Amino acid sequence: MVSKHKAQVMPVLVWVITIIMFSLTVSLQAEDVQVSSASVKPATTTYVLNYTDHYDNRLNMFIKENVQIQKKLTEGDTVWAEQVVLLGDSITEGFNVSLYFPGQTFVNRGIAGDRSGMVDGRGLMNRLTTIALAPNPSHFFVMIGVNDLGSSVDSEKIISNYQEIVNTLQALYPKTIIVVESLLPCRGRYAKLNQKIVDTNSKLRVFAKEMELEYIDLYSLYKDDNGELKEEVTRDGIHLKKEFYTPWVEEINKRLGVNPK
Image 1 (cartoon, helix red, strand yellow):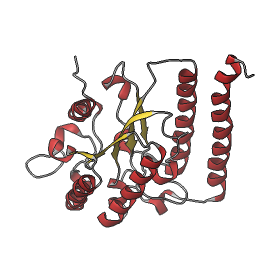
Image 2 (cartoon, one colour; image 1 turned 180 degrees about the vertical axis):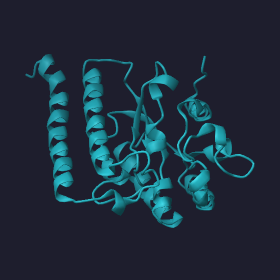
Image 3 (cartoon, helix red, strand yellow; image 1 turned 30 degrees about the horizontal axis):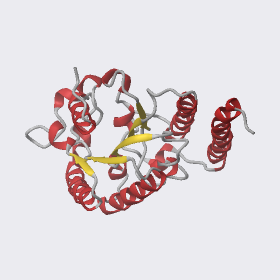
Image 4 (cartoon, one colour; image 1 turned 90 degrees about the vertical axis):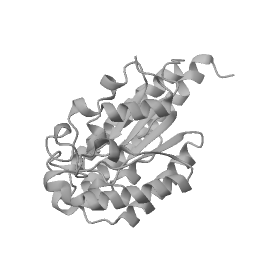
């Protein structure tokens, strides 16, 4: 007969072993695949100098966070029974969830420079695993694609990637709610992407409806009269200043049924 203590320890041990194997895979990818920032050409190259190293570091951090969450769950911590996951690129990475969602169990799974598809063994699709996402998510809020557009990936391919992303998330977490978020507008030197962003958002809205997923139109909340990202909310034309995530926060809280104090 297995003791209560051993029964509690077993899930953590399984996670630790799985994580060690996954971490070794990430390390081998970093050694075997020689990728330069020039070959990836993310729209956020000014935000992160070395995409591959940053990606691997963030991914390992996600795994360590999830080990701690799983440990809490094994110990009976009901506060972390479910997690809300923000999934995306640098715009998501810059979202300070502890500041904007105090007391709520949010995890930030944004990686600067990331794209919707596979990028030389990396990219969002490469990290759609339970050990890199969260143990028991209630919601996924997904925004990804501006780096694709900045790398000349067309909107049709982005939608195709979204299909695969959603299919994978639904297979991993059948009961989890997935919310598709529009891409934000850009300004300045990035404003040339706006027509592509409008086209992609239009397709994302249709995709979300067809997949019976919720859709948040953040583009309309952040655009000025010229259809560009409002000047006051950004320093570089693509990323949000930390104090201007509030409209996004309000939209997320609406989906969660939360009334901020």
